[in-house]
Image 1 (cartoon, rainbow, N blue to C red):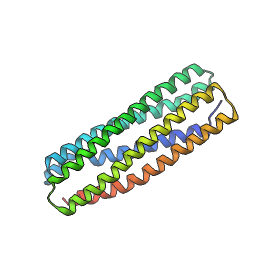
Image 2 (tube, rainbow, N blue to C red):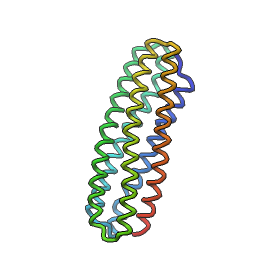
Image 3 (spheres, rainbow, N blue to C red):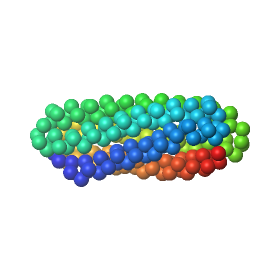
Image 4 (cartoon, one colour):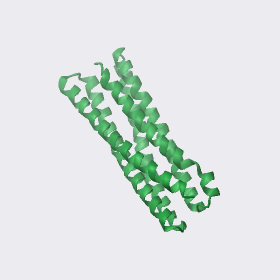
Length: 202
């Protein structure tokens, strides 16, 4: 079984997700500048905590990406047992990213609660809107990890039983992952613009 272009496409998809979250991390982590411009410390701290969790998600997403990139190579070489073991490792790191995404959603709720310390109604509104978008993004990422886990499970089945039916199932899984990635990209663009507007007000 050789996934060929399907495998390469999936690797690109996962890479995009990692970059998206890394962009969010970059926006969140520059806390010293915002602290010096009068943003309340509780908000700064909450934002930093969210950034740290985002960093973990980036690391885990990259780990999963690297493992998936190796699976097809191992299978081509006839090392099916190694490929299957690597799929299990990928499912583990993907599951950890899933857990971290829930943790990030809690950090974002804390961040929203800290907005009461911001006295400007206009700035509060922009920040609330940005956080609402980011919560939607995290929700999509959670759904993405579920879709990816389904793909990995069906990829295991395909390696063990390379039938046309199983190949079609894997193709469908890749399309589902791609759809989630597109939604994440769109939400991230909205979030980035909101945070730029918020930060420029200080």
